[in-house]
Image (cartoon, helix red, strand yellow):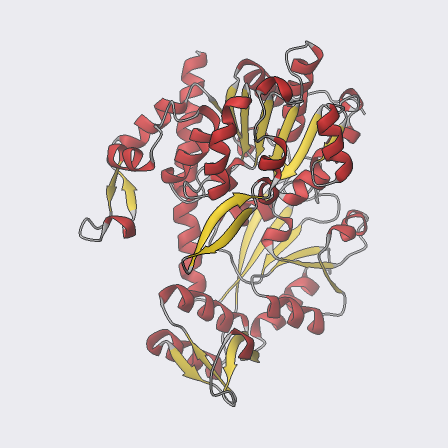
Length: 482
């Protein structure tokens, strides 16, 4: 099959070709991988590029990029190898391939040593030290680095991203791809943009970036513990700084797929479970029949409350005198959401459905209650595409990036919601993408008046922050084109 770009893909390809430091903020399902391959093929064919190192989430690096190269006849001439394999590393040393892939985690693997009773970083056993250390740019088989799912590099504290800074000069071309550039706030942009431009647009230091564009939510909190919000009028200044290197393509503007319906399915907690929930919420501790649930702080409390709402919770056996992680047991509280899931699936005619879970015990309980359900793994993808799996249970992180699953079904149900908009949007986008022929339904099992409502509100707030960013950048580009 020959890759023939859609109009929006032509825009993306042209943007990457014309920008050595370029970000492609394209919505999920718009074909970022194919656009990037087309731009890369253009440069290599014209003798303007030696090759590319692609850094991506594990599944995307192992499956998505090789599959995309194999899918399109006009890209198959570009040999692609994985640096996770010995064959791939040997190809790197000989310069035999056009594309080399690696996952973020393998890029930098810290080595620690106990120095004076303290755990001290002393080196790196990842791919950076093996393939880049001590090299000149002329000695590398690539001159382009592509950061797929760039938002994985949003933390300015990331050791692997900090370590990469010393090798950045070895690459002539820096591209970043993502559909969720600011999953939490504008603050997430700093590390991502610096990775692409070396700090030219938003500065080299996070402290300078924060003091210039942000203000503390509470100025009386110690600096290291402060949370920040964009200062009035500064959002536009940030967008203006990066507009020359970013192209924004929104799914709703270009994606030609059937409509998506979002449906909240209300679930009532049994009285006994509601009592457990209320006690834990107010007292941070609750005694069950044979176990004890304790939340040591508010962050832990949110997770514990989500577990109670879902029907089971990790608790400590009361028989144990000293409680540790190893003494935890799963205590079931109710099966209201399990019953609601089963009823929902049956009401949808048992159409293939992806069920998103957050805790391991949810997967185990669903598999036990619904015999037709199957635990997700990469070797199940062919059966899913063939419509052979009626219900697929997965954590968002296990299938969140790069997988094309629109052929196998059009139903997603969130058993327990993630409050990460990136996880939420990425998992939904596995079925809401080009090639989907049916109307998509995204269900959320929600217990009103509980932590479920709070998570939905948090998702809405974070998503709105990102939506404003993308809309503003899109408007700037539209005006510039006139």
